[in-house]
Image (cartoon, rainbow, N blue to C red):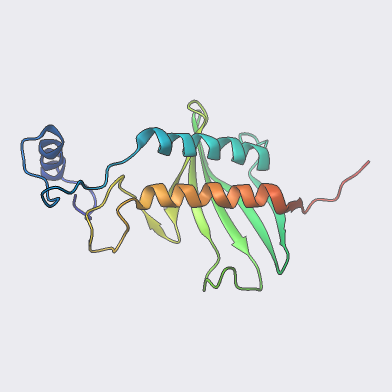
Length: 176
């Protein structure tokens, strides 16, 4: 699969020939290449939708949500801001801010998430200013992405949202 964007008609035709068996695959004899587990990937995206709804319950009506993330040796602010709203989808930007380094990373996690309200699913469309993830990559490739890059960034979103659910606290004062 090509790494250039946008996909050309030739890319689509050549990929369909491979899928239909009209062409020899690039996998060595006796060794299967990576194949996407679509059911598992969709289950992760569906679970991410429900995690997001727990963290940002008024997603369809509000423009932003923020909370603090408290870990034993790390404190950060997590901000969700709505980029685009449509009748069936919402685009969220998630940014993490802290004075400390997180997990030895030079920059904090930042991603854009498309939330499909009708399908109750959420997927990462941009991570650390990289976007347009294919379901599968040949390896090595020009962008040096893993074969399952799309699956990995959505799994990371799920793990991060779970961390936020377990260790997050509201930045808003509670009134009684």
